[in-house]
Image (tube, rainbow, N blue to C red; front, top):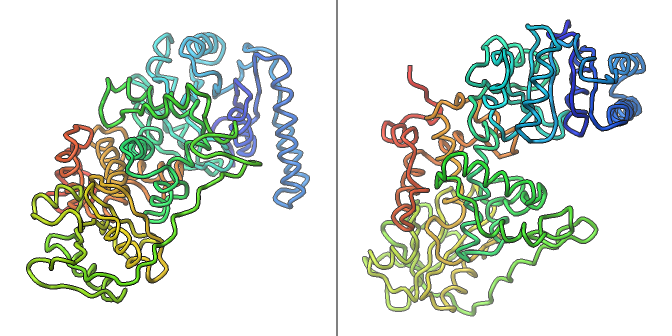
Length: 506
């Protein structure tokens, strides 16, 4: 296949630049490597040769393929040497002034029809292009590391970017087997924007002392199927990378509450406790392995009390069946007896609020998260309220662990853990669609591939039910009085009309 761009220049030959160069060469383009650091481009070429020789040794490419790839790589001695390039991609330091100077220089060197692309992850494409005579020729072209494995690529149109340029980049992305998603020029583009809910809401949960870091990670992995818990993920990316991104997107959106960072990460960054690479983050690491505290043992309870379930409990019939399967003695009267364990199952509200509204005995009341079907989760989550007696807490824990499924007992929280984190993720994604940042289908593809979520945020909302997500958000706003949880119009309208969150108006 003839590549869309015969000659491609790569400026900046770190890990990202090398990865882009690898994909371009494999797509059939002649690739010119340039770096301002002496010897860096040569070292990048040697590294790429080593990568391809490894693939050869594994039988994934043959000798002729190796030679053709190597024959397409060339080191450029200066920026003017990039004149023949039909596409130049920069992967240099994230500084607006540096990128502007580079592209202004490139614009005077390459042909007027050449495409200039920035791999920026956080800067405005429009701002980078503002110094150019031909801003229509510059677009964002955001890859993820490691480039060969992370198959999604964001193609970002600045305010004056030509639609033809974006189409060329999208088509070129497909030529090397990756998946392009198109986005408008907004802070965080698609993936970094959509990812704001996971970490920031988990940090709020931890900040309220609802549960410790390890428990929050376990809950989100076992209940919703996230590959990594939020604190594991932040340890992997490191807070010296992730916290500045949190602050940048928050400030670029003029302190929008949905993106509010946390003092927890600011403090840990200041103290140098940034993650796995330094041996300590939210977890301590020995030989690169996280030292995760063991789960609390299941309490031994000699005799379990009878159980009474609130008539307002979510999935009440399913909860009754679960209790029956676990061998519980179930009370079915209009009110609990004086010695019964009382269960509530709220969506978005905390246990304390339901105790007050339903006039229940707080000392015997716990909440259980029933947002998802019990059979679909690998963990049950119970919540106490400030007055819950230890014997009732232990009885509930022992009862729900009877069949061997892990149980986490947390402190009172509007929306437990999973409800509030998932609702925040869905709400941010819905508002991205409301703003027209990207198409709903592109959003779900980008997040699934870019962040490794078990499903896209909109699919997640449809799985739970838009009306349930709305109930969680409205009730959390009641509990916390924070506009962070106000539902997006996109979510509110589709929930009210019974439409999928991926539904676009005709």
